[in-house]
Every structure is written in C-alpha cells, then in structure tokens.
Length: 231
Length: 231
DNA sequence: TCTAATTATTGTAATTTGGACAATAATTTA
DNA sequence: TAAATTATTGTCCAAATTACAATAATTAGA
Image (tube, rainbow over all chains, first blue to last red; front, side, top):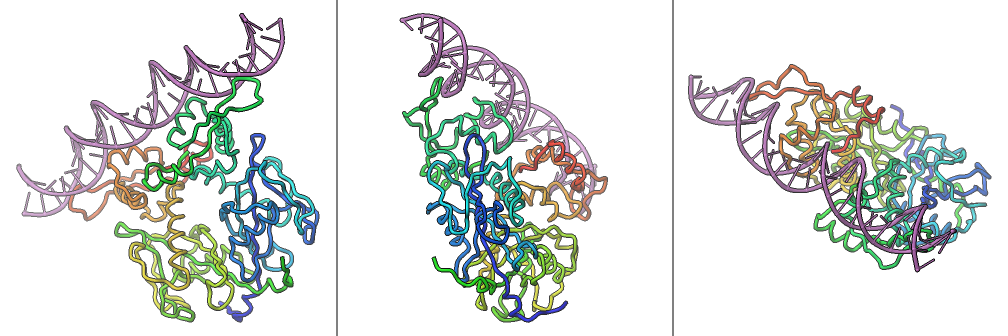
C-alpha cells in the first residue's frame, strides 16, 4: 500500500447541493437553476455552492437556500454524499446533498449571482442536468419518500391549512397508490389535526373543512410515546 | 458576501469512518481500534482513513474494512457525513460514515498499520472515543436500526443458519421490546425462510430447527411487489 | 325555488391481523 | 422412565383494515 504525503490529501473541496422540494398541482417538484457560469454553463442544475473553509455543512446549505429564496428557519435534511473522483471537471469535489421542503406559494424565487434562471420542475419530467445531478436528485427523492413515510414532514409541503383530500393526494403520490377516502380518514385519526371552522373557497361543490397540523400536540405525544408517525 | 479565491477551496481533505457492526451474546457491538498515531494516540476510535485523491468513497470504505478484517464483498451502507470546521485538529477534514454488518465468528481481526489494538465493544458500554466518534457512532447506530426495520439486512448479522429464537432476539434488541414467541412467528410468515433438516447442537433441551434466509425468493418477491420488508 | 350534479363526511359489516395464552412435541438429564 | 426445559402449533378474542353504502352540504342551472 503506497502512502502519499499528508499534505497531498488537503487538495480537495466540498460543496453542498440543496434540493428544494415543493408540491403543486398534485406533483412534487424541485427548484432548479440554470447555471450562469462554467462548468456546465446554461445547463439546469441543483442549486449548490462550495463550502467555505470555516463553514459548517448545514450552515452552507442554509446559505444556499437563503440566497435563492430569502427564506430562513427552514429545516434542512441531510441526504447523501457523492464523491466519484471525476464528478467535477475542475478538481476533486465531494458534494453533500441536503433537501428542504417548501410551500411554493410562500415566497418569490430570486435568481442569485450564480443562477441565470430559476424554475420549479416536476420530477416526472426532468431534463439532463449538470454534473451527476440527475443521480443526486433521484436518490435524494427516494430519501424524501422514505422520510415522508416515517416523519410528519408532509405538512411542510402542504399549505398551512389544507383539506383532508389534499393530504390524501400527497400520500397517494408518495406511495404511488390510491387509498379509499373513508379508510384514509381512519388511518390518520391518531395524527393530531386542528379542525378549523373555515372552509375551502371557490369550489363548484360542497367545500371541504380546512385542517392544520397540531405540532405542539404531536411533540407532546412523541415525548409520552403515545404515537410514532407511520403511514 | 465575500468571495475567496477558487483555489483556496481546494485545501480540505476527506475521510471515511467505517463502523463494523456485529452481533453476539444478544448484543450489537462495534469493532473499534486503539489509535497508534497522533492525534488522539491511544484513544479508542472508529476505524477510518483519509480518502486518496483518486479514490471513490465506497472504495475507500471497502479498503478500510479489508485492511482490518481481510473481508471482501461485504455490502457497505453509507450513513451520514460529519463536517464541523474544527472536528479534526490538523485541518479541515469532512468524514463520511459507512457501516457494514458482519458475522463476528466468520473472520479474525488483524490490527493494521494504524491500529495498535482492535476490539469488539458493546454499544451499551462505550468509552470516550477520539474526535467526534461518539456522535458518529450513535447516529450511525440509529440509522442501522432504521434500516433493520425496513430491509432484510438482519440476516447479515445472524449466522448463516439460525433458529427462530435467535432471529427473534435480534429483533427484540433492535426494537427494545419483547415479542410473544407464537406471535413473532406469525409476523414473519411472509419472509421467505428455508427450513433445514439440521437442528441446533449441544443444547440441554429440545433443539430448535435451523433456518436460513431465502435471498433468491425474496428478490423475486420484491420484483413482483409481493412484499416489502417491514417489521 | 327546486333539482341534478358533485364532492365531503360518516357509518356498517365482513375480513384480516395482532395479542394473550394454552396445549402439545421433542429433547436432555437424572 | 419421569421431570425439566424449550420448541412449535393452535385457539380465542379484540383491534385494525377493507370494501362499500348512506347521508350531508354545496353549486349550477332550470
């Protein structure tokens, strides 16, 4: 086994790639940027940036999110790390992928210094992306689906107040299977929801009641082991 | 937002940390090394090494595993990446943790060049480790438990032929709860096991039948969507 | 205003699963 | 051969799941 000089190891860089997932029109979408610089200029890509030498990973991920959306205080979930030796044409760059769940309608996207254009793209309809970003995106999407099934993060994708049907549709999309309406409502009866008096607006039929997720009650329940979130 | 020179980013290193989990005496254990070099010389640590500039992440993880155990062809699972700016006293080193499941009795551990001593240590009984290794170990253990509940990897920890009781005990340990024997057997009836004629040896009571996991049938079943592994 | 259309919401009965516990079987030891 | 010990199977009841039916609330149009 050969040994290289210790300092020769310190010739690499790392980056974060932040996959921002949103949900609209019954589909999960990712926010992509059109790269404004080399390499892969003009190709669509996952927003990301090199990590500063004194910066924490999560901090870097939050920085990228903020530059693009102006949003703070959004939970970032670490997904996986990708590091094939030749994945970046300009040197050895290992990238750590993070994802966050956003409400598309809650903010306006700002194209940043390194992005010429920004767009929500449905996962069913993904073009060829820069670097190994198609691979990163699809494996991060798998991780999202796993987490959606085990943690109550679906509410980060839904509007603050949602109908039970919207909730159900998101789960049907996630599991790629249809549920019976009546049975879905029984299935979720142990998830603490707040029922509001407010109703759905502008629909051509009986409007549905609006609900919101009761975070506080859920946190309490977790502590007392009253439930774990399992769909 | 300040910008540093592009080349200043290429001053970091990355490492893999390989957590080797084994199962014996009703407990899950990790293989730790006593560090033979600075920093943290003589402290117990997770085996790991810097990644060579032209080396793939998984390849590096397999190299560490091989140096320590002589084992090849063991599935490595990527866990999480840790990168607090000051986690390594000699520079910026981000580490990617991998884990593998081993049958303790199937090989002999060899202390390697960078390890003075090697030992299986129960997770219930963990000393202070080098670097942020206590943190890495405990969060990787959480990921192991999650995967044990969703993928049939428990069989990598059990002997090739096992009794249903051994299988049950591993699950009781994982879930930290006891199951009724009869009911456990119903619960697992959709997991394809091969029943052998062979029986348990050298026990002071009725010997139990030995089973092994039917990988082929499981893979087939997965393809046809006949089952997903959920405990 | 009344009726059809549409979707929301609740209920019911049958089936399946899960948990508690009892009964029987196969060994070893003395 | 009997006692001890653990393996394995069976049974009953409660709980969860499923399929499907019934009722409620709203809009649109006659």
